[in-house]
Amino acid sequence: MSANSQAEGRSGGRGSVKSCLRTLEVLEYFMKSGEPARTIEISEALGIPNSSADEILRTLASTGYLTYSQATKLYAPSYKLVANASSIEQSFFGSGRINEVMEDMRRETGGSVFVTQQNDCWSESVAEMSGGWAAKPDAEPYYSTEMICFQRNSWRPGTNFAAAMLAQQSNVDIIQLATRTQRLGLGPKGPTLMKHLVDRISMTRARGFALCRRSATIPVDSIAMPLRVPHGVASYAIGVVGDPLFSNDNDVRQMLSGMQAVIYRYNDRLRRRTTVSVQ
Image (tube, rainbow, N blue to C red; front, side, top):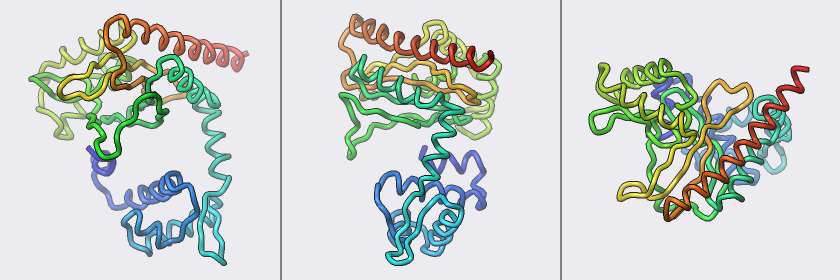
């Protein structure tokens, strides 16, 4: 499911949401391009009317999130974006600790590291740090974006990253998520084999990780683990991906040992930070 169809599923496709999405797309454009741009360039790149792009850019500039040159007609991000993002990171994500744990995990495993978050019925990749593997631009593998999916007559986590996120939730929350997914038409209605879903997630919860091996339909190996986030209102997961990531069970054990050590150090820093703030 594409990002746009996900957004429409969450909002019912309301037209009022479109301008919000376009504003975010403008900011993402600057993130990807890495250089100033004129209105027409952004309009063409995003496939939106020039008038809409102009209105969004003017609004962002008037509120200080973009800078604008009257002489060159160029827009560029303002440092206000960076300062505000840093403040959010400090308050909600431990001031760079997520980036640190990603770097440590890449160093320990050599794999590409991904952080995902739950957005109601969907799983979204929100951060990536390339290691020894990267998806080819012209042949990027498909991954289910649903948190849970209905396959082989039962509900199951959409991916091992989804399983790692769901492992942080109660069985009641998991069943409620499945019910919401049913209402979106992503699976059959009724309490069809919900126990299989709960049992699978219970196994991930007990092990502390979810593993996915390459197969005819899955192009890469991956291991995902739950990731605690300060003040988080949604579940997160972190994991490594590679092709190949491991060749045998001994490789898996060594990789898990390195990943668990990284997560332990990260959680220990979070505990100490929480203790200091309480005192």
